[in-house]
Image 1 (cartoon, rainbow, N blue to C red):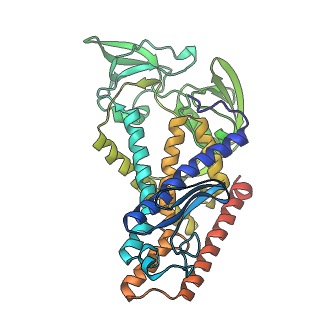
Image 2: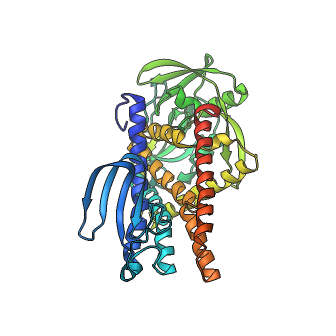
Image 3: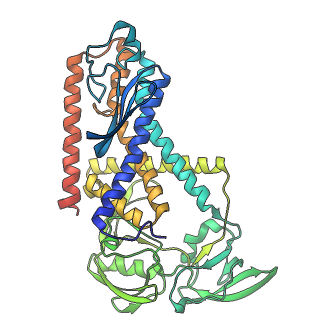
Length: 441
């Protein structure tokens, strides 16, 4: 289902971006706040956003909770902090209150409080991934026909809901997780023979090609996204040549070598034409590294909805943790490859790119948007652990120095490193904005 009707794409994009960012920032800063409170450090201000305050209240502990006008981040200001970054002291704290400040707290308390922000982002990512898995379920074994996806009349099927798929054109189908592999095993024909178990009896019925040209997802900021391709669109021809298998579309895109292609699209009974030029995209390999391919930015799937079964809580959490691991390792690998010039810097996204992706994922539905929040939360947690002053990772480096040297770094050294870190962050932000708007629009 569509998250909302597409009404004013720019306004919708901004709203989606603000919602996604606000959820992630709120969780991150709440991690700092609640762990700091557990460690005996008093928070004076919890702010969602920067700039002029539009809402404020003070709780029974004396913490001011506020929402500010610029929803591009947030902060927790602890007792005695000179600023929202918890750098330096305002010098107005009495000796009796020193333990309740960030600077006066024990090293373990400061370390736990700072680390809590990224950790809470990781927990949010795992919770969202696990929740998505529990909501979707997983394919039953054997694979069972649910209902037909929206397809043109030519894709009519003799399969019925509840049919258990045993084989396709004699190729035994004994693992519901092997759906992707089936496209390489069955003949490339418009109509195929499906061996199914129906009401206890085995029979052979006819159906369309296993992997049709239906669009199951659209990559944000891709050529297909820019051309307004939608989920459930069906590609019926490319450059006037009829196609019925997703593999045919992939082959034409690959051979085009970046040249524009005219796609004939079936959408809810209407026929449209879209001209799309494939783009070179760096894709992560399962065994590590990246490969560059010509893509338009769509994915396909089998022609029917699969019957699913529930997933237990612990299994879902385990799979959610695996999703977090995959997301972070892929991100680190991409950064390494960018740093050494092995893949394009267009793989870096800044505020503009993230905002566009937010809007695109929200258009694809609530489930896609929530999953995106989880992936973005994982990225925010990872970036905040980088050993760069200003970020949480930079503070943790200072604490590590303190643990080894048995003394805090000098105020002068902290100020210099903070200036360098802030300069790096601002430079990177300016580069990514340039990347999003001019170099890789």
